[in-house]
Amino acid sequence: MEKLKRRTSLKKLIASLAGFAGIGMVAKAEPDNTPEKEVFNVVQDQDIPLFSGSTKLGNMIFVAGKGAHFDGDIKAHTDHVLKELEKELIKAGSSMEKVLKVNVYLHDLNDYKGMNEVYKGRFGKKPPVRTTVATYGGVPGDSLVEMDCIAYI
Image (cartoon, rainbow, N blue to C red; front, side):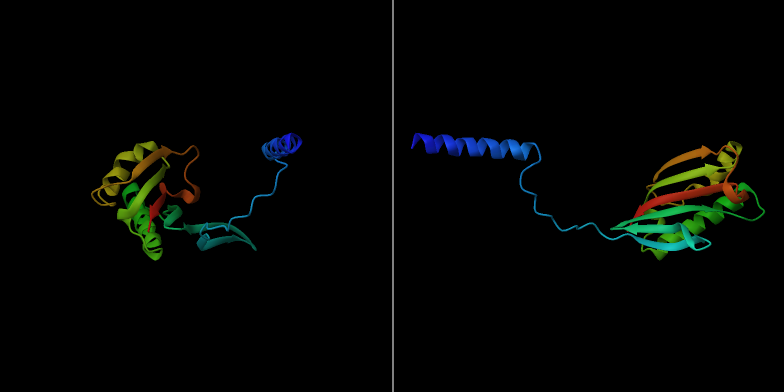
C-alpha cells in the first residue's frame, strides 16, 4: 500500500513537472472568435494591394489618411479632408461623433491655426483625442493636410 502511494505521488509529481516544462498534454484548441477584418476601397499598385481606404474589425473602423489633391489654401484642404473622412465613416455605419482618435499631418506647422478653425466643432460636442504634427518633407500628393481616424460603429 505504501509503495502504491509513493508511485501515485511520484506520477503526479512527474506529470506536474512535465506540464510545467511544456511536455504535458496539448491543450484543447479553442475556436477563434476574433471577428473577420473587412477592408474597403483597396488601392492597388499594379496587381498588388497597397492599402485599404478603411478597415473594419468588430465594431471599430480605421480610416486611412485622406488628403486634398487640388490647388487651395489650408482651410479648403481641411474642409475637403474632413468631408472625405465623414463619407468613409458613414459608409461603414459610423459618424464623426463616434470618432475616438484623429491624427493630423500638416505640410507646414504655420497652417495649424487655419486647420484648427475648420476642424473645430466637426466631431460634435465631445471631440476625439488628436495628435497634430508637421511632416518633414511635406504630406504626400502635395496636400497641405492629411488626416486619419479611428472610430466605433
